[in-house]
Length: 237
Image (cartoon, rainbow, N blue to C red; front, side, top):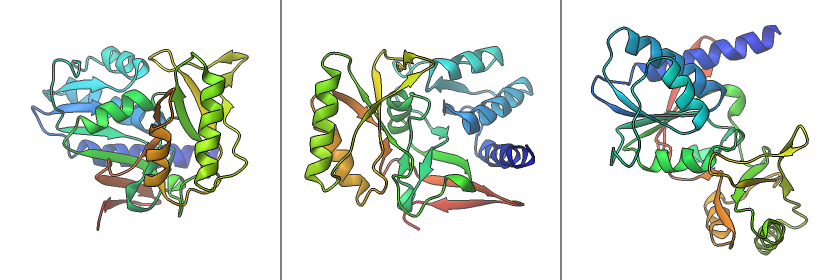
């Protein structure tokens, strides 16, 4: 329990540091997941204190949280470009390459992120890895012919040297998990990803794949919480 409490505290510290970068008048993307949830709570407190911003949520759950806190919400159809998106990650590798999608919000998270001038990732140190892939990579697929799509994902992976990959349809409490867009999620245990950019391109070319949880060249800044400090890491530095 103490360990969980310390981890939650570090997530809060990273979220608080990110809030310092939010300025009045900003158009802000709000991420999904446990660390982003902490950030949204802090944004809600700031809005209650007079901060004037407008936000776009990366999931229905985030939208509901933001709405309950009185945070002004809009859509990407109404706002052409966001100033900043703050989100978490399931894994963070070299050059701020990410794996996201543990909460099945990867498609909307990526759309919001690439619609922003800057993406900041907030996390505790447990999310840092030397090489992506320990966390199974989520791949979002349309329901039609999804088993054949899974077979094509495995074939594309095999062609890159990831032999024996078995994509697993995500099921929770006996029910198939669906994204906010109604799509299915296959979790792909690569173990170790040698080139995130190459794999990202190969998966994007698979018919039936809507998107995948590899975020390559998208995140600009990482705020990573260690015991007693929040480290700032910029991509390319």
